[in-house]
Image 1 (cartoon, protein in one colour):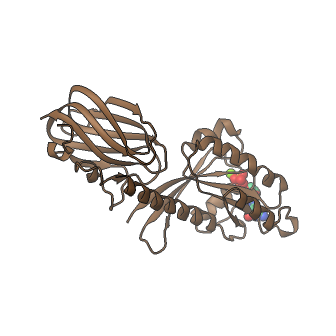
Image 2 (cartoon, chains in turn blue, red):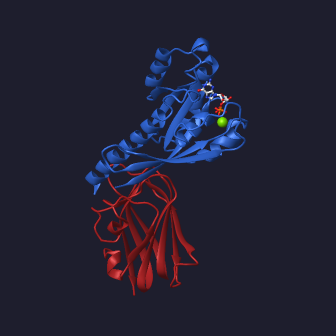
Image 3 (cartoon, each protein chain N blue to C red):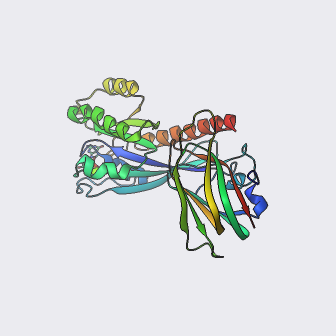
Length: 186
Length: 136
Ligand SMILES: Nc1nc2c(ncn2[C@@H]2O[C@H](COP(=O)(O)OP(=O)(O)O)[C@@H](O)[C@H]2O)c(=O)[nH]1
Ligand SMILES: [Mg+2]
């Protein structure tokens, strides 16, 4: 039985629903606050995810880097060495999707060659009449960047756990892979 | 004796930040580089050894993988307090073989040794053996 620990950084434009998503994940879909103020500083959500059929688990330390600060000032300092990445955009905002490339560049610059499993999340899937980013387009871009794609609605409590479960599984797979490598060295 | 296991100095692991029961920190002191302890995610990581008697050390030798920055501290108290830094180093990255690093110590005495890994070249780092040259 092993309990891994992963620092999950949550990035994306302001107001795409990063905080809403992490709160939904924390509370198992318990509550959605419609109009709360934007995250002032960074928040940390800690939750353990069990890996099916293994007795093992991954404890996710989700760092929500807030919305107001400029990138360099706030987020970067907090990131340290990230374990996994959750990149979020709003499907009703083309601009938030376009900026994902920039976010990814910044994160990668910060990771210094470290392999960081990541997911791309299209949130606010409930806003179907205002959708500006098609699923297929987002999926294709995610694939080209080696990210797994998920669509969620924090408001309708839809699929909010999936991105985090997938990150936990990817990190666990990486651990098993590394153990194999190390066993061949000794 | 450079290749003596730490356990032959009566060392015990009294703390480790994280571990997988299949790769316990005791693997670090069994004198064997094939068995190892592996971290389970995030930094810093640390482990502490306690000796039954005060040990006077001239060298610490470490086999590891993917460790980047390591700091070694010692305590001479009986209750693992008042640690002071005795060595600090950025290890070279290796691929396909273990990292091996020596720390020369000119007779430093200790009852406890604490190893703090502050960063790694990967998410997971392993330590295969810590050996010391010294006298009890
Ligand atoms: N319709 C809809 N609104 C959402 C959803 N998720 C978040 N919001 C709203 O979007 C706004 C910004 O959310 P927030 O979590 O603060 O975004 P952040 O800046 O990325 O952390 C808030 O008013 C939320 O209520 C969603 O899935 N659907
Ligand atoms: Mg927020």
